[in-house]
Image (tube, each protein chain N blue to C red):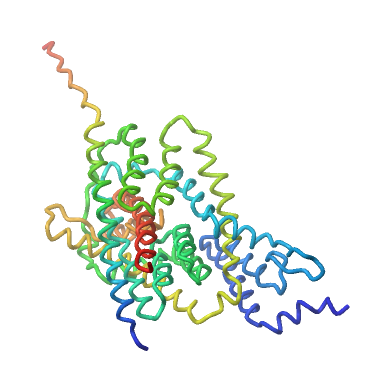
Amino acid sequence: MTVDMNLLMQTLKLMGQGMLGIFVVIFVIFLIVTALTRLTAGKKPKVEIDDQE
Amino acid sequence: MDFLLDGIRGLIADPRLLVMWAVGGLLIYLAIKKDFEPALLLPMGFGAILVNLPNSGVLTQAVSGLDTPAVGIIQWLFEVGIEISEAFPLLLFIGIGAMIDFGPLLSNPKMFFFGAAAQFGIFFAIVMAALLGFPLKDAASIGIIGAADGPTSILVSQVLKSNYIGPIAVAAYSYMALVPIIQPFAIRLVTTKKERQIRMPYNAASVSKTTRILFPILVSIVAGLVAPASVSLVGCLMFGNLIRECGCLERLSETAQKEFANIITLLLGITISFSMKADMFVKKETLLIMCLGLVAFVFDTIGGCLFAKVLNLFLKNKINPMIGAAGISAFPMSARVVQKMALKEDNQNHLLMHAVGANVSGQIASVIAGGIILGLVPTMLG
């Protein structure tokens, strides 16, 4: 069986670009979600201290 | 009365039809007896028998004495619903999007990265397929079995005009059903018992309704800007999710999750059987594709686990590498597998919520992977 080196190099390039592409998209989504979560987080309710004592 | 024997003559002329009856019977058996993705494998199995009957009326046939051919329903469904428009797999994503609760992922966004890492098997299988002599369009279509996502596999192989849509769909759905067997084996290959016992406390942040609503919109925009070819896949998935999360379309959300998804699933299963005609399926390449599909699933799992292990070199709070394995798209099986394995190693180690987060991330990452392949491969073929 002969290996088509040109095709092999194409698939390795596809692997590199594909995995990089997925990580880039996921990283951008991660940043957006992190920012959204911080921006839209409700304020923690203040603890009322009963000072009657 | 000679015409009554036409069918028998057809069988004798092409005994491969009998092989496909056996394949159809096997799929029906797996669906009913083994509960392997029955909603898809049963229609596919029955359809495989229908399209492999000699001169089958479900396929478009030339009729002697008539000017126009008699249109066969399965062939028509395939041409309209998959070949021309890719409508069925895309519409199914609306239903899937409506079913997914991204809450566990949004509350623990680190899990996003495991979805990305667990797509490694797709590209590893593409390289292997090329080494075995498949041309690039077929190698890429075979690799996408590793997306662990039936509609994505069908869509990508159809858009790339692969010659092996039938075997790819069968492999994708069969291996999704086999996740509880494949993943534990692959996880044990690359993790130690000590690593599998790592505990991960779950401190989920609360997720606001605004985040839940903006998430599908922003993900669609980001995916569209970076990988435009993924818009149809991501867009349909996120449209379904927006219907679910908006809070004002309860009826549509219910319909998308149940009736709509069921109808499309039913049609997709029987329609894809068109690509299981004997002349397209009974080839030695089909066996190779089944093997490569398994390789893709195993290396998805290995990719996810190894990514977690690399992260652990730099993290103070260690990640259980099994979480990486949950980054494939097979939801919720993969998360359940990880939870079950974690409890087996340590009966107090509850990883389910982390695993669910990684698992739903896998659903997003797999459609992005499909879109990226659709963007890159035609350029390379160019």
